Length: 222
Image (cartoon, helix red, strand yellow):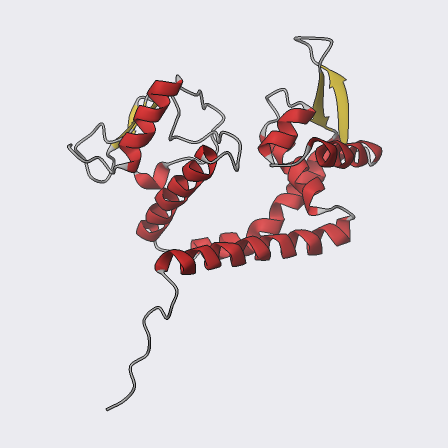
């Protein structure tokens, strides 16, 4: 009788998933360094360019950059200063408050941000290998993980469906599209969840907690 292979060894499924996410993060970091060395950008500088490109219609201040990317104020300041020196980012007075400095991309910075966004293509290719159903399950799982990190204070408040005043989890009986987005007034499925949405508006703290818990419970009681 042949030997049986251990199913998990001494590690749990949680351990294996955590290991996998760590390897994905390492792959992204490696790609960022490789791409950045060609373009003379550090991964942090590249992240800032992409953030400013994604929030082009919003006023972004230095402390917003630090908060969004989980950087210290000093690290964010040094990286932005370098990008300003490279003429990829410029500091301007906010039209709403002349006392406030906001960060915007220059034309060269916008072009650089497009190139920088390509650093994630290796991971995109891996995600595209999943079926539509697997992508929806994966996205739902990532939403839960990010919400947990947010609750622990590890990351800043993410502009995702969970916690948005427009989002209603399990508002419909349709298993394919059980949720509802009040902004577009349409039902939505797990595959349509957003982890970054420009239309995000946080609900009040009690309301946000209630909506989040409804999603995390998986619609129990519906």
